[in-house]
Length: 104
Image (cartoon, rainbow, N blue to C red; front, top):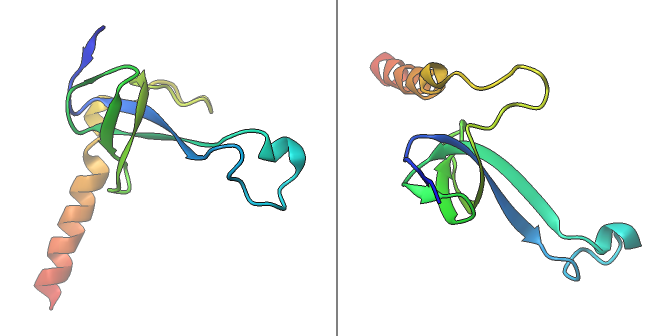
């Protein structure tokens, strides 16, 4: 398997609620499947596809799940992510926090 380096944009997958543990009032067809979540973020450590990894999302959350995709494309038509722009949001948030401290 190919090792994916820390800092790479990836998708992870996790099961939030397995079938059988869903709320009792959900429709039967919904209760019959797992409640799943897919999250995109920056890999925090080297890993391989199919392994459990930790990521940091664009919102700054740290999450853990199974690595499913490397440099995933957005399905809504904007194409592949631009790696050079991946750090703009966190850098801006950090700078804004510094400015707020200086205002006090």
